[in-house]
Amino acid sequence: MTDFDDWLARTFAETDGFTMLIVLVAARGGRIDLLKSAHLHVIGDEMGWAEMAAYFDGSGADWDAVALFRADRDGLVGDKLAAERLDALMRALRGDRTLIREGVFFNRDGLTLRLDDAQPQQQPHPPVLR
Image (cartoon, rainbow, N blue to C red; front, side, top):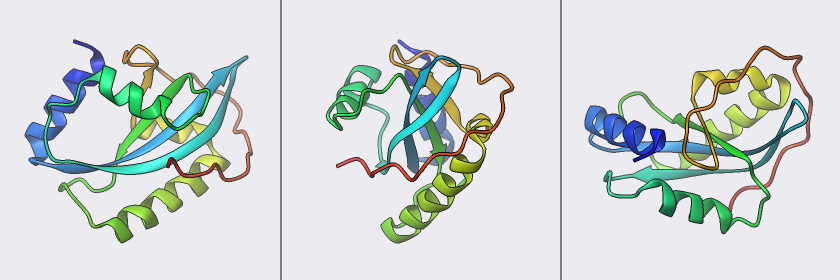
């Protein structure tokens, strides 16, 4: 079991399904660089960290960590609303990486990371996971 597995089970139990906003990042040399983003509808808690990491690896991004956010506190949202909220999140993160603290942040092993104080970093919009 990883921290991700615990978080997924707990979050699913609270909502009975939710839409997850995903932001893959490179975390190197004191920088957090946004790589790719996507949304995913979670309708069960059977997916473990190994499957989720394989999904991220399939993006082709050289990622070190992932920030996950709920698109809505009440649970699932439609694709259009999820895409709008992901766009808004990415605009905000491009201006201030410390907003990652508002979600959950995991390393490649599915363990929780903490984002320490840092200067905001500017970066262009990353591509969407495909």
